[in-house]
Length: 226
Ligand code: ADP
Ligand code: MG
Image 1 (cartoon, rainbow, N blue to C red):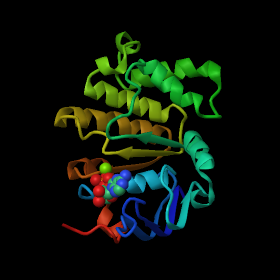
Image 2: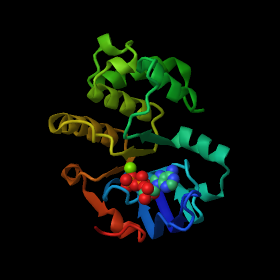
Image 3: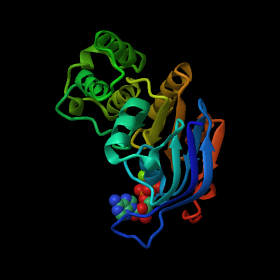
């Protein structure tokens, strides 16, 4: 299993009485691509942060790629994430003053697996596949378009060849045409690398790219249907 959750509960420490996640059982097989949709505020980002070990569950079992995240300390979870999980954030979280290559190199730096020599070639190849032209490789990422920044964020998430790719509404700031382009670049890359993909969004039109589609309200008992 890529993801397996049992009786998972989560509340933010700022609001301990408000249960944000209450998941009895949920799992995703390795190599599956899953689209989870739900309303804003339903707990999508919280779920992804929990699965990647950024947040820790209050109770229950969180197994990722057969490892119990809930039994790890925060440093172990950070190391696990760097080695096994690629994360694409809604707001990209690129380092603005670094160029595309340096942003991706930085992600590779945190992973123990990466051998140095092949890295530059792999970065160039990924950027090319993702349609970032060489002229843009050395610009600070703030000088790239939103669409380009989003594709650099994908390259950064994929450089360590993570088994699990997590995407948090990564195309919500793109217009329809760029959103379709983005998805048609992302999906074959994920398939080629046989990655497990968990993609969340409130935008149901993106579900066409997925075979497995789930409503967050069916997974998370704390997410009310509006
Ligand atoms: P979504 O990604 O589906 O929009 P979130 O996971 O961001 O939903 O938020 C779920 C709930 O948790 C919301 O009610 C939100 O206000 C609350 N929440 C999110 N982040 C925090 C935080 N850092 N501290 C306290 N509450 C939070
Ligand atoms: Mg969110």
